[in-house]
Length: 438
Image 1 (cartoon, rainbow, N blue to C red):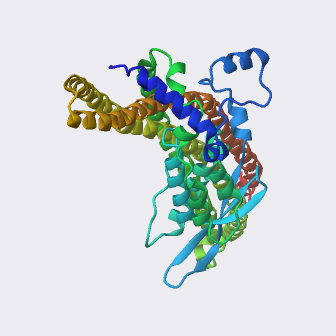
Image 2 (image 1 turned 45 degrees about the horizontal axis):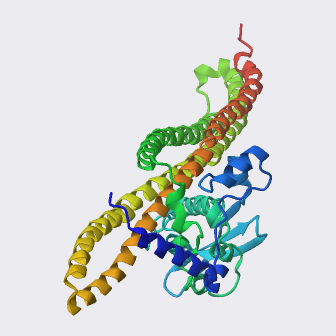
Image 3 (image 1 turned 30 degrees about the vertical axis):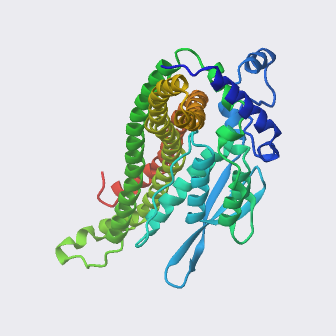
């Protein structure tokens, strides 16, 4: 890789000095990714020496905020129904109404301001024929999205997030866009951006490749686990429906009024007792069906949704790696090639000292500044990637929470159903009693 000349260092220093003097940049939200409320002394000393390291634990990330997203009763527009969501933030103590398009504007601004961070994807938009199942699935996805954003260290300190979660004015989209005008992205606002390369380890590219492969493998495994968890929850709900129908059939049999034939009159009392007992059993089977349905819903909410949240986080990391590779890295490689050609042309112009050559030299100096900025952005992208990798690893203990929720749901569900089965068993005794029983 070609190294930039000393002029690049001077340009970077001037840019940083101008940034500190620029009041607009000073008033812009600057993510404080290395802050911690109650750090350990030794740990804090290490972090102060290297701002690349993140101090956040999973508990600290989860404590940043909890956001609820609920459906607002449908309101009909002039032509189409508009689905609205009530978004409630525990941190800001606010509850605001948002539509899907508000989420879209908010998402686009996050990508604009934080192109080198993990911005979770939004669920797809469905123009026509959105049934209740689709609307509920999208509500769950929007809830996962906003909670991941609200707990992300740089995002959580940005004014755009605060506006989205607390602004109750009439036009939130215009307010969001207005807050981002003239601010620039994180590279332009972060004071460490021009010195990011100084903090990167020498083997950053190797670390990036290894981390990307590890996260890809974890994602693939948990994707399969999520599918299995969905099937388990679905089977519990199907089991509930079967138990309910089983009880209804018993009730129908017990309520049968078809008269007995004369040759069966000897056993009329037996059949009457059986019908009464069968009809009574339907109550227990309805209770069993209710318990099975509760377990299925609990598995959906506590297990499947947590798996989806974890997968959304991992997917946002995969998307970030792809943006870095196809965007920043590609631009950086092109800039280096362009700079190599430009340097040879500048050298020839200096030797010729012709007026036209001098003009070309001046234009090349402007291009050189662009190349330098591209290289600085590439280093800052790797800097952010390193931090985002740490953030993913800080969230890996979520796997223990997921497994714990799965085990707890199974224990509680089977314990409750076992009690109902135990209560039902004595009632079977009457099925075997009668005038001719032995």
